[in-house]
Each structure stands twice: as C-alpha cells, then as structure tokens.
Amino acid sequence: MKYLIEKQIIDAVKKLLTGRVNELLSELDLQVPLIEFSDYQGRFIVVPVVNPVSCERSEKERIIRLDVYSLMVHFSFPDTADSELFCYLFSGAFNEALNEDPTLGGIADRAVLTEKKYLPPKTKKSGDSWEIVIGLRITVEDITT
Image 1 (cartoon, one colour):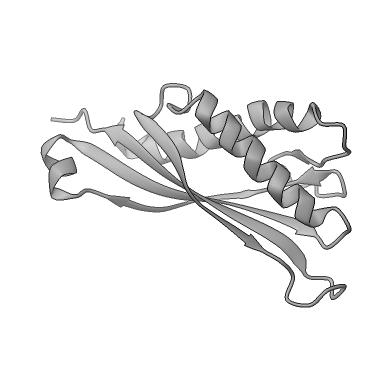
Image 2 (spheres, one colour):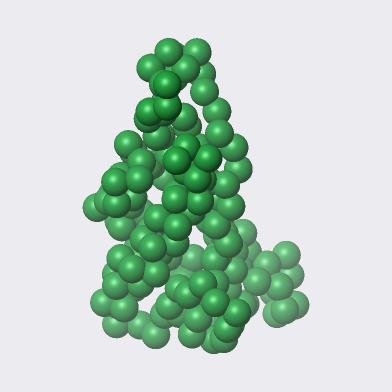
C-alpha cells in the first residue's frame, strides 16, 4: 500500500544498518560499536536516528510517476579518542552497503547517498558528542492509478 511506503523505506534502511553495515564494521580490526535499534545504549552500541525529511516530485517526476524521498540518518558518539574515526568508519561502511544494495532490498528503485555532515563537539572534553548526519535520496515508482 502506498501510504506505508515511508515505513517500508525506514525499515529497509534500518535492516541495512543492522545487517550489512554491522557486518562491514565487524570485519575491521578495531573495537567498533555495533548498530542496534533498542533502548539499550552503551559504549559498544550505537542507536542511530532514521528520519524521513520530505517527499517531493518535480514536474518530470510527476509525469513519469516517481516519488522522491529524502531521509536522514543521524549517528552520535560520545567524545573519546576514537569518536572521529568512528564517524568516518560508519560513513564508509554505510556508503559501501548502500552501493551493494541500492534498491534497499527491492523497496526502492534507487537510493543514493546525497550528503555527509561530520559534526565535532563544540568544545573538547565537554561531554558533547561527535556526530555524523548522512542524507539519502530514495526514488520509488508510484504504481497507484
């Protein structure tokens, strides 16, 4: 059903994160936090926020019946010696996993990474976190008549 597509997209992105992205991160020779979607948070677990931002249609996309969704994935890491490195590792693993499955398991026609924002803490050793925000553009054919 069309009105569930946003939920399907969010679930597919979460599956990619807890599946292939975690696999890629676990192959590293470093102790890297794993991605979970639970209430638990600790030193070796990161719980990203996955938010749909918008759904747009240009005139061309309206004619060819494509919906274009924007989605943001937000990671936050406590300020430690490895936090900046974690931002780069998670970004790279997410990019690689998305390149391997650009249809998000068949939910979308194409998902592409559109932006990466690396946000260091405003003040070192202040308790603020390192953050990375990853933007996605997801196109889905509108099959409703």
